[in-house]
Length: 274
Image 1 (cartoon, rainbow, N blue to C red):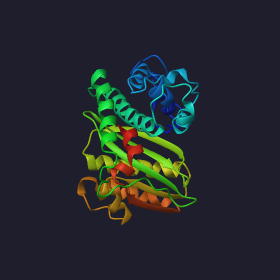
Image 2: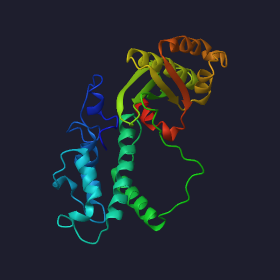
Image 3: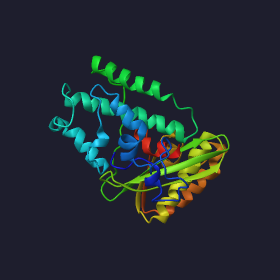
């Protein structure tokens, strides 16, 4: 919610976007505050909460104002109905934003979005379920994104395969976790591993042209990351020439490394490639 999501207004600052309007309501420029607060669908979903919230009536001028409202919700009782707790509203906000983000992506990427009425029910059902079972067992292993060392840049990469083309993408962040750049590119349709290898080739060029001397390349295609980390280009014949080209290009960087990132630690690059 600090405008790091790959929404149309944000993407337009990096490359041309033909349509900046929200894919849900088509009436305003799509940014995170619009999507989660001011979009007609978002307003209806907030109003379906147990407290009939009207966030659009508050003076929220930025995503950070929205977050501060949620953090300081106990101080907002003069503007809202009674009978709530800060924890419950935070929980409802998490569920709403998560399901609305998925709904938006279904529309944007040609999927079949669920009926809004069903979306309302799912939000309230999920919220009620979590309230009744607040501490589910954690997954056996959960990985989060970790920052690179000071002075390094970490570039997460991913690829997705469509019916007629593939998309490769990358997101670069510094040691503080701040996004410093991102990029994406369409390539001809190919196999998933070939697309992941092309993504590696793309991000090495991206790092070199950005004049970063110390770069950690991270992706969720383990065979590609392992092959480049060990400088072995002949592991898979189907894309050995691409890996060989990658290895040659690494000479343009002073320091580099490759690391495997599970999907949950690679989510920004994954979403950008969708």
